[in-house]
Amino acid sequence: IWYRPAGESTELKRLLTDDSGVTHSLSIPPPLIRQEHIVAMRAAAERLVAPQFRVIARLMDVRVLQPFYDLETPRRGFGRVAVVGARQYGPKPVRMHATHTGDVAIAGRFMPRTLTNPQSSQFIEPALVVLTDPAGDAQSMREALNIGIPIIALADTNNETRNVDVVIPTNNKGRRSLALVYWILCREVLKAQGKPASDSDVTRTVEDFDAQLGEAAAR
Image 1 (spheres, helix red, strand yellow):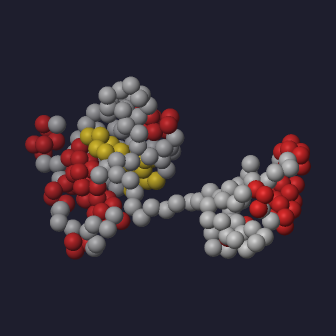
Image 2 (cartoon, helix red, strand yellow):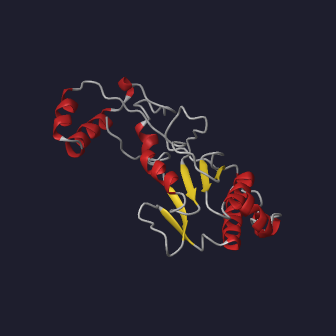
Image 3 (cartoon, rainbow, N blue to C red):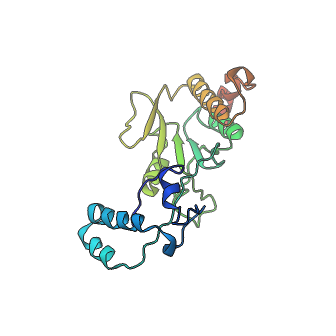
């Protein structure tokens, strides 16, 4: 088995058309594959696949042509992003962001094995993590690395970003700066989802994301 790209409206349509001119929608039965395509597949096997597989390709009497389609979705799935904030001033903006975007908030202490132990009552399976501080959220970073998911992190000049896939340079210690950054992230995610349609439609303010001193001390 090997995969080759084919334009859906051009080459794929040609490959799925049999000798009688009928174009099959999802796949084409092996006996109906046109001889010219079989010859081309044999030549491609000789040219593209490893030597040990060329031998197998030569011995095969039947060729199977099965399309695999790349599907695109107009919106991302909810709950597939975990937003982590353990240190002071982080939990409030993290919760606000998650509340409005549908992301999963891990605010406050990150329980070990949250991402790696299916037996844990707090186990989640995100496709992406956003860290407020690579140092303060080091446990969640280690677990994200273990399961091989991308890491986005807010980082200032004191942070080590070697294992971070996308860095958002910012002051990730300050109360107001965290409120502003998470408000911007929330706004842009909502705009990507089509709600709101523009900046002027945003109803929440930076102050709504701001962890007041009393809140930070009581968390």
